[in-house]
Length: 305
Image (cartoon, rainbow, N blue to C red; front, side):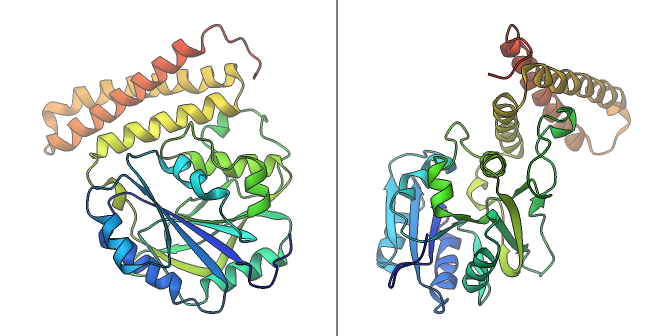
């Protein structure tokens, strides 16, 4: 795919949910990048904090799609995927800020590395310290016994807060899997891209500040953990053989039971009982999800469908 004159080099998609306080800074940092042809899409997932009216007034040049309800991260990105005209698509969180030259660094990297289908950028905290932004293993892969062997490259996935993809490739494979509401969809997309023969890359020169967790501020820690557990089990069922999924869940049940027993026995002696109560609730959730997955997995045999 060759960029035509006037065609955007990069299409940027931002999914927003109650992020009025941060999305303005994100958009201003993008608009300040004047050395790269770009187009910006914001998909608002039913925000109730005034985000839509703010964006309409302050950023009239940005394409805004306002959903009446929260459709989830994966589905919201897919809503505008067909509108993207850029050679590359940058999936970006609204609680990020681009350092100068990020878009040019992204384009240069992708042009120089045609074997890379998706690449992550360097994410830092407000104080400049680095954030975790890539992984060499997928969720539960240590139990898979070679099911994912032979994939190109050494990077398994990059975090969806900031990742760039080849537009033609990500469109061809259908974008994000909408079975994932929030969490897990970035690992799934990266794995599907690798199965198409492309590597996952990392752009150290593209530095982006990331606050993190802004759209989940009204969700309890336990609620966030529950969402992550749900996403994990979707990933397992999609990418591993049923016997591997059973092995993962049996291990999770045993570990959760052990942790619950030990925490319960130590409870009378700990000073911070609220912290111990939270851990107990967390492991009860792990146990519950694993048990439910085992029940759903019964009778599926040993071969992946």
